[in-house]
Length: 227
Image 1: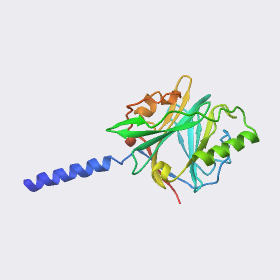
Image 2 (image 1 turned 60 degrees about the vertical axis):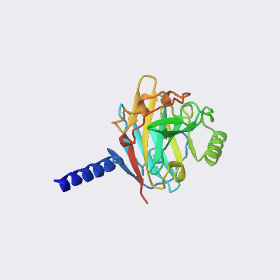
Image 3 (image 1 turned 180 degrees about the vertical axis):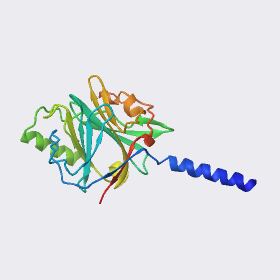
Image 4 (image 1 turned 45 degrees about the vertical axis):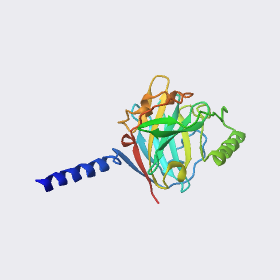
């Protein structure tokens, strides 16, 4: 009887540990060609990417070029996008936000509630797309290790992200993401089962860095980069 109780306890612990890293959505992201971050999700440019539908409408494209995670987000109407990223072995969540300007903000876990580790510092408010703006985006990438077009560059319903892989996101080839696209009257997001702070907080509205947020990484998509 005692052995049976010990076995049951061990089984419970194993299942609990397993659930802590299990996610419903898992994507093996292919290696593909580099992109130009210009706010145009060109079919030929993204033909080597994996793609998924967003809940509520729209589509998401994912690939990597060996140096960065490349994400294209296509909403159903004019709007803006943000990507939440966290890696294995880190408690930090990085929010990459691209409305009419761009920035990213780190959230740190404190007893199950995530707190902002800074404030928004918006940059790249440019409108349209010119060689000068392309050069500014390139310089932003070099300085910040990520970049995206804002909602006023080229297409009003397409956002392209380039996010450096490696220590910034906690792991070289495996991490977790949640994606959200916001329009005036609705949110589109991936994975479809999201119900944590990624879709319930004011972060998507821009300008807010609310404290005491509850994120549930088990609801996010597990991303593995193909070699």
